[in-house]
Image (cartoon, rainbow, N blue to C red; front, side, top):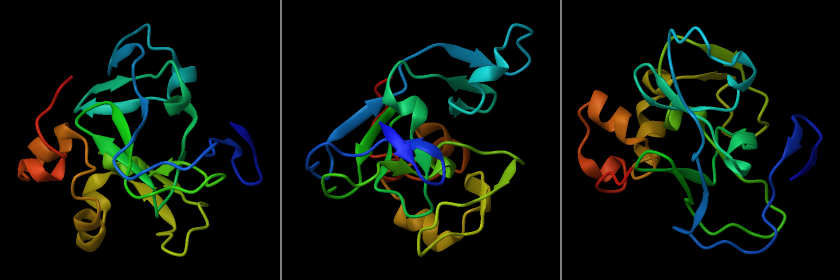
Length: 158
């Protein structure tokens, strides 16, 4: 992890990473919508894995930035893997819409050539983008949108 000119900090590959290689996990606390003890300070760092449930990470997954042109994706529920080969010093990013859904929207400043200008949930993704993410979408979105299992990369192993 090091300073990032746009986002304050980012996670960068220390060495070459091969496509399909595991990068990080969301392996921390579970949170549920409506929990009166929900610690709002974690809200920007959690991964949605069900309609009203989120999970934090104990490691670098917590601080990965969004990109509209990601190089890592979601496998099953909580694992982040390389979508393609990644070069040393390349920033590791995923599209938050690979696991998030709902009505939220934020201005996007990822700077990628494919930047959509707005971050939003899976439902807001153009069909062509959804298709390019096949195999890298959270299992709960695959179930919600009744996509076949190839969209999540196989059986869930939570």
